[in-house]
Image 1 (cartoon, rainbow, N blue to C red):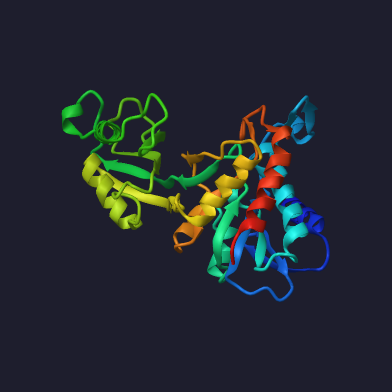
Image 2 (tube, rainbow, N blue to C red):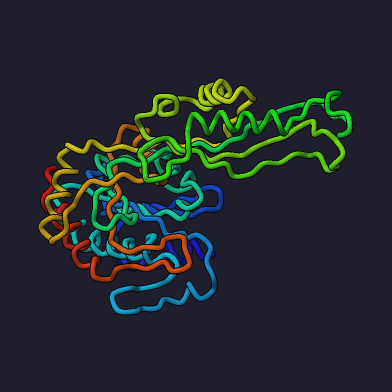
Length: 340
Protein backbone atom coordinates (compact mmCIF):
# COMPACT_ATOMS: atom_id res chain seq x y z
CA UNK A 1 0.00 0.00 0.00
CA UNK A 2 2.67 2.54 1.00
CA UNK A 3 4.91 1.60 -1.93
CA UNK A 4 2.08 2.15 -4.39
CA UNK A 5 1.17 5.43 -2.69
CA UNK A 6 4.75 6.67 -3.10
CA UNK A 7 4.77 5.56 -6.73
CA UNK A 8 1.46 7.25 -7.47
CA UNK A 9 2.68 10.45 -5.82
CA UNK A 10 5.78 10.77 -8.01
CA UNK A 11 3.91 9.79 -11.17
CA UNK A 12 1.42 12.49 -10.19
CA UNK A 13 4.26 14.99 -9.90
CA UNK A 14 5.19 14.28 -13.51
CA UNK A 15 1.65 15.22 -14.53
CA UNK A 16 -0.64 14.24 -17.35
CA UNK A 17 0.18 13.90 -21.01
CA UNK A 18 2.79 11.15 -20.68
CA UNK A 19 2.54 7.42 -21.28
CA UNK A 20 2.89 5.32 -18.11
CA UNK A 21 3.67 1.63 -18.22
CA UNK A 22 2.94 -0.13 -14.95
CA UNK A 23 4.78 -3.20 -13.71
CA UNK A 24 4.49 -5.49 -10.70
CA UNK A 25 6.67 -8.38 -9.56
CA UNK A 26 6.91 -10.06 -6.19
CA UNK A 27 4.35 -7.63 -4.81
CA UNK A 28 6.57 -4.64 -5.71
CA UNK A 29 5.03 -2.07 -8.08
CA UNK A 30 7.10 0.02 -10.49
CA UNK A 31 6.49 2.34 -13.42
CA UNK A 32 8.14 3.58 -16.60
CA UNK A 33 7.11 7.03 -17.81
CA UNK A 34 7.83 8.38 -21.29
CA UNK A 35 6.25 10.61 -23.90
CA UNK A 36 3.56 9.05 -26.06
CA UNK A 37 5.04 7.28 -29.05
CA UNK A 38 8.55 7.02 -27.57
CA UNK A 39 10.69 4.27 -29.05
CA UNK A 40 13.17 2.02 -27.25
CA UNK A 41 15.99 1.93 -26.62
CA UNK A 42 15.59 5.24 -24.82
CA UNK A 43 18.55 7.55 -25.23
CA UNK A 44 18.55 8.09 -21.45
CA UNK A 45 16.70 6.49 -18.55
CA UNK A 46 16.43 8.45 -15.31
CA UNK A 47 16.13 5.88 -12.51
CA UNK A 48 14.83 6.49 -8.97
CA UNK A 49 13.87 4.14 -6.17
CA UNK A 50 11.08 5.14 -3.80
CA UNK A 51 11.44 2.54 -1.05
CA UNK A 52 13.33 3.19 2.19
CA UNK A 53 14.92 1.14 4.94
CA UNK A 54 13.15 0.99 8.32
CA UNK A 55 13.51 3.90 10.72
CA UNK A 56 12.16 5.30 13.97
CA UNK A 57 8.70 6.85 13.81
CA UNK A 58 10.08 10.36 14.23
CA UNK A 59 12.21 9.97 11.11
CA UNK A 60 9.07 9.89 8.98
CA UNK A 61 8.23 13.48 10.02
CA UNK A 62 10.71 15.66 8.06
CA UNK A 63 12.54 18.31 10.03
CA UNK A 64 14.60 21.17 8.62
CA UNK A 65 17.54 22.64 10.50
CA UNK A 66 19.28 25.33 8.47
CA UNK A 67 20.44 23.80 5.20
CA UNK A 68 19.73 20.26 6.35
CA UNK A 69 16.45 18.43 5.84
CA UNK A 70 16.34 15.45 8.22
CA UNK A 71 14.19 12.38 7.73
CA UNK A 72 14.18 8.83 6.47
CA UNK A 73 14.74 8.82 2.71
CA UNK A 74 15.63 12.50 2.37
CA UNK A 75 19.12 11.61 1.16
CA UNK A 76 18.43 8.07 -0.06
CA UNK A 77 16.80 9.11 -2.38
CA UNK A 78 13.39 10.76 -2.33
CA UNK A 79 14.54 14.33 -2.92
CA UNK A 80 16.50 13.20 -5.97
CA UNK A 81 13.44 11.31 -7.24
CA UNK A 82 11.36 14.49 -7.19
CA UNK A 83 14.09 16.44 -9.01
CA UNK A 84 14.38 13.71 -11.65
CA UNK A 85 10.60 13.76 -12.11
CA UNK A 86 10.66 17.55 -12.44
CA UNK A 87 13.42 17.56 -15.05
CA UNK A 88 11.69 14.77 -16.96
CA UNK A 89 8.41 16.71 -16.98
CA UNK A 90 10.12 19.87 -18.23
CA UNK A 91 12.27 18.34 -20.96
CA UNK A 92 10.84 15.02 -22.18
CA UNK A 93 8.72 16.66 -24.90
CA UNK A 94 11.45 19.12 -25.96
CA UNK A 95 14.44 16.85 -26.46
CA UNK A 96 15.36 15.54 -29.93
CA UNK A 97 15.55 12.01 -28.51
CA UNK A 98 13.44 9.83 -26.21
CA UNK A 99 14.02 9.56 -22.48
CA UNK A 100 12.18 7.69 -19.73
CA UNK A 101 11.66 8.04 -16.00
CA UNK A 102 12.01 4.66 -14.27
CA UNK A 103 10.44 4.50 -10.81
CA UNK A 104 10.96 1.38 -8.68
CA UNK A 105 10.09 0.39 -5.12
CA UNK A 106 12.47 -2.43 -4.21
CA UNK A 107 16.05 -1.17 -4.55
CA UNK A 108 16.69 -1.46 -0.81
CA UNK A 109 15.87 -5.18 -0.96
CA UNK A 110 17.83 -6.04 -4.07
CA UNK A 111 16.10 -4.49 -7.07
CA UNK A 112 15.15 -7.75 -8.80
CA UNK A 113 11.42 -6.93 -8.83
CA UNK A 114 11.88 -3.33 -10.01
CA UNK A 115 14.77 -2.48 -12.30
CA UNK A 116 15.63 -6.14 -12.81
CA UNK A 117 12.04 -7.02 -13.68
CA UNK A 118 11.64 -4.13 -16.11
CA UNK A 119 14.84 -5.06 -17.94
CA UNK A 120 13.69 -8.68 -18.14
CA UNK A 121 10.49 -7.32 -19.73
CA UNK A 122 12.55 -5.63 -22.45
CA UNK A 123 13.24 -2.08 -21.22
CA UNK A 124 16.46 -0.79 -22.78
CA UNK A 125 18.49 2.42 -22.82
CA UNK A 126 21.64 3.89 -24.29
CA UNK A 127 22.65 5.44 -20.98
CA UNK A 128 21.22 5.40 -17.45
CA UNK A 129 21.43 7.99 -14.71
CA UNK A 130 20.49 6.74 -11.23
CA UNK A 131 19.69 9.45 -8.69
CA UNK A 132 21.29 7.78 -5.67
CA UNK A 133 23.21 10.09 -3.34
CA UNK A 134 26.69 11.07 -4.55
CA UNK A 135 27.29 14.64 -3.41
CA UNK A 136 27.16 15.76 -7.09
CA UNK A 137 30.04 13.45 -7.94
CA UNK A 138 29.72 10.86 -10.69
CA UNK A 139 29.78 7.22 -9.64
CA UNK A 140 31.09 5.16 -12.56
CA UNK A 141 31.89 2.01 -10.56
CA UNK A 142 30.24 0.15 -7.72
CA UNK A 143 30.96 -3.22 -6.18
CA UNK A 144 29.13 -6.46 -6.71
CA UNK A 145 27.63 -8.46 -3.89
CA UNK A 146 27.89 -12.13 -2.96
CA UNK A 147 26.02 -13.48 0.05
CA UNK A 148 26.34 -17.07 1.15
CA UNK A 149 27.32 -19.69 3.71
CA UNK A 150 30.21 -21.81 4.82
CA UNK A 151 29.18 -25.12 6.35
CA UNK A 152 30.94 -28.01 8.04
CA UNK A 153 29.91 -31.45 9.23
CA UNK A 154 31.64 -33.21 12.16
CA UNK A 155 30.92 -36.09 14.48
CA UNK A 156 29.03 -35.69 17.74
CA UNK A 157 30.66 -37.00 20.93
CA UNK A 158 30.64 -36.45 24.67
CA UNK A 159 32.51 -33.25 25.54
CA UNK A 160 34.64 -35.16 28.04
CA UNK A 161 35.92 -37.34 25.19
CA UNK A 162 36.55 -34.90 22.32
CA UNK A 163 38.98 -37.30 20.61
CA UNK A 164 36.00 -39.53 19.89
CA UNK A 165 34.29 -36.85 17.77
CA UNK A 166 35.05 -34.11 15.27
CA UNK A 167 34.12 -30.55 16.24
CA UNK A 168 32.36 -28.91 13.28
CA UNK A 169 32.71 -25.46 14.88
CA UNK A 170 36.50 -25.76 14.98
CA UNK A 171 36.58 -26.79 11.32
CA UNK A 172 34.31 -23.86 10.49
CA UNK A 173 36.34 -21.25 12.39
CA UNK A 174 39.50 -22.54 10.71
CA UNK A 175 37.79 -22.00 7.35
CA UNK A 176 36.73 -18.51 8.39
CA UNK A 177 40.31 -17.71 9.37
CA UNK A 178 41.48 -18.76 5.89
CA UNK A 179 38.76 -16.66 4.25
CA UNK A 180 39.74 -13.55 6.21
CA UNK A 181 43.41 -14.19 5.53
CA UNK A 182 42.63 -14.12 1.81
CA UNK A 183 40.31 -11.10 2.15
CA UNK A 184 41.39 -9.21 5.28
CA UNK A 185 39.18 -6.54 6.79
CA UNK A 186 40.65 -3.19 5.66
CA UNK A 187 41.58 -0.66 8.32
CA UNK A 188 40.95 2.21 5.88
CA UNK A 189 38.78 2.61 2.78
CA UNK A 190 40.03 0.29 0.05
CA UNK A 191 38.82 -0.58 -3.44
CA UNK A 192 39.24 -4.28 -2.78
CA UNK A 193 37.16 -7.37 -2.12
CA UNK A 194 35.89 -7.42 1.45
CA UNK A 195 34.09 -9.98 3.59
CA UNK A 196 31.72 -9.38 6.48
CA UNK A 197 31.12 -12.37 8.74
CA UNK A 198 27.50 -11.93 9.77
CA UNK A 199 26.50 -14.96 11.83
CA UNK A 200 27.71 -18.34 13.08
CA UNK A 201 25.30 -21.07 14.16
CA UNK A 202 25.27 -24.69 15.22
CA UNK A 203 22.24 -26.89 15.86
CA UNK A 204 24.06 -28.24 18.92
CA UNK A 205 22.23 -27.19 22.14
CA UNK A 206 24.22 -29.11 24.72
CA UNK A 207 27.36 -27.63 26.22
CA UNK A 208 28.68 -31.11 27.01
CA UNK A 209 28.44 -32.31 23.40
CA UNK A 210 30.86 -31.92 20.49
CA UNK A 211 28.89 -30.14 17.73
CA UNK A 212 28.34 -32.20 14.59
CA UNK A 213 27.41 -29.30 12.26
CA UNK A 214 28.05 -25.56 11.95
CA UNK A 215 27.24 -22.77 9.49
CA UNK A 216 28.58 -19.24 8.98
CA UNK A 217 26.86 -16.58 6.87
CA UNK A 218 28.89 -13.96 5.03
CA UNK A 219 28.42 -10.86 2.88
CA UNK A 220 31.18 -10.31 0.32
CA UNK A 221 31.61 -7.17 -1.84
CA UNK A 222 33.89 -7.17 -4.86
CA UNK A 223 35.06 -4.64 -7.47
CA UNK A 224 34.61 -5.24 -11.21
CA UNK A 225 38.34 -6.00 -11.48
CA UNK A 226 38.26 -9.11 -9.24
CA UNK A 227 38.23 -12.00 -11.69
CA UNK A 228 37.40 -14.56 -9.01
CA UNK A 229 33.91 -13.03 -8.73
CA UNK A 230 33.14 -10.60 -11.58
CA UNK A 231 31.58 -12.46 -14.48
CA UNK A 232 31.53 -15.76 -12.58
CA UNK A 233 28.53 -17.98 -11.92
CA UNK A 234 27.35 -18.83 -8.41
CA UNK A 235 28.73 -22.33 -8.86
CA UNK A 236 32.16 -21.05 -9.91
CA UNK A 237 32.29 -18.67 -6.96
CA UNK A 238 31.24 -21.39 -4.50
CA UNK A 239 34.04 -23.60 -5.83
CA UNK A 240 36.56 -20.77 -5.44
CA UNK A 241 35.47 -20.08 -1.86
CA UNK A 242 35.62 -23.77 -1.01
CA UNK A 243 39.20 -23.89 -2.31
CA UNK A 244 40.12 -20.80 -0.27
CA UNK A 245 38.50 -21.95 2.99
CA UNK A 246 38.85 -25.72 2.80
CA UNK A 247 35.17 -26.15 3.72
CA UNK A 248 31.90 -26.36 1.78
CA UNK A 249 30.72 -22.99 0.43
CA UNK A 250 27.27 -22.08 -0.88
CA UNK A 251 26.23 -18.88 -2.70
CA UNK A 252 22.71 -17.76 -1.79
CA UNK A 253 22.59 -14.39 -3.60
CA UNK A 254 24.78 -12.89 -6.28
CA UNK A 255 24.66 -9.41 -7.78
CA UNK A 256 27.18 -8.26 -10.38
CA UNK A 257 29.25 -5.09 -10.01
CA UNK A 258 28.60 -2.05 -12.16
CA UNK A 259 30.96 0.00 -14.27
CA UNK A 260 30.53 2.75 -16.83
CA UNK A 261 33.28 3.91 -19.17
CA UNK A 262 34.86 6.87 -17.33
CA UNK A 263 36.01 8.25 -20.69
CA UNK A 264 32.64 7.84 -22.36
CA UNK A 265 30.98 10.90 -23.88
CA UNK A 266 28.09 10.82 -21.42
CA UNK A 267 30.30 10.66 -18.34
CA UNK A 268 32.52 13.47 -19.60
CA UNK A 269 29.51 15.66 -20.40
CA UNK A 270 27.99 15.02 -16.98
CA UNK A 271 31.24 16.04 -15.29
CA UNK A 272 31.37 19.16 -17.44
CA UNK A 273 27.88 20.36 -16.55
CA UNK A 274 28.44 19.63 -12.85
CA UNK A 275 31.57 21.78 -12.90
CA UNK A 276 29.56 24.59 -14.47
CA UNK A 277 27.44 24.65 -11.29
CA UNK A 278 30.49 25.15 -9.09
CA UNK A 279 31.06 21.55 -8.00
CA UNK A 280 34.08 19.46 -8.98
CA UNK A 281 32.15 16.59 -10.58
CA UNK A 282 34.87 14.11 -9.69
CA UNK A 283 34.48 10.40 -10.32
CA UNK A 284 33.53 8.32 -7.28
CA UNK A 285 33.52 4.61 -6.56
CA UNK A 286 30.79 3.12 -4.38
CA UNK A 287 31.29 0.10 -2.16
CA UNK A 288 27.59 -0.66 -1.92
CA UNK A 289 25.60 -2.39 -4.65
CA UNK A 290 22.93 -0.48 -6.61
CA UNK A 291 20.52 -1.05 -9.48
CA UNK A 292 23.13 -0.02 -12.04
CA UNK A 293 24.39 -3.60 -11.94
CA UNK A 294 21.31 -4.79 -13.85
CA UNK A 295 22.16 -2.46 -16.72
CA UNK A 296 25.87 -3.29 -16.59
CA UNK A 297 25.04 -6.98 -17.00
CA UNK A 298 23.42 -6.07 -20.35
CA UNK A 299 26.35 -3.94 -21.49
CA UNK A 300 24.54 -0.63 -20.81
CA UNK A 301 26.50 2.15 -19.14
CA UNK A 302 24.91 3.52 -15.96
CA UNK A 303 26.13 6.10 -13.45
CA UNK A 304 24.95 7.17 -10.03
CA UNK A 305 24.50 10.92 -9.70
CA UNK A 306 22.65 12.56 -6.85
CA UNK A 307 22.59 15.49 -4.41
CA UNK A 308 24.52 15.88 -1.17
CA UNK A 309 23.74 14.95 2.39
CA UNK A 310 24.69 12.22 4.82
CA UNK A 311 23.62 9.58 7.30
CA UNK A 312 21.66 7.40 4.90
CA UNK A 313 20.23 4.31 6.64
CA UNK A 314 21.14 5.92 9.97
CA UNK A 315 19.24 7.76 12.72
CA UNK A 316 20.23 11.23 11.48
CA UNK A 317 19.82 10.95 7.71
CA UNK A 318 19.72 14.37 6.06
CA UNK A 319 19.65 16.09 2.70
CA UNK A 320 21.88 19.10 2.00
CA UNK A 321 19.21 21.41 0.61
CA UNK A 322 21.79 23.71 -1.01
CA UNK A 323 22.73 20.94 -3.47
CA UNK A 324 19.25 20.63 -5.00
CA UNK A 325 19.48 23.64 -7.31
CA UNK A 326 22.88 22.68 -8.78
CA UNK A 327 21.65 19.10 -9.09
CA UNK A 328 18.63 20.27 -11.06
CA UNK A 329 20.76 22.53 -13.27
CA UNK A 330 23.29 19.79 -13.94
CA UNK A 331 20.58 17.33 -14.98
CA UNK A 332 19.07 19.86 -17.37
CA UNK A 333 22.47 20.77 -18.77
CA UNK A 334 23.30 17.13 -19.32
CA UNK A 335 20.09 16.29 -21.19
CA UNK A 336 20.14 19.48 -23.26
CA UNK A 337 23.80 19.01 -24.19
CA UNK A 338 23.60 15.33 -25.12
CA UNK A 339 23.77 14.27 -28.76
CA UNK A 340 21.28 11.88 -30.24
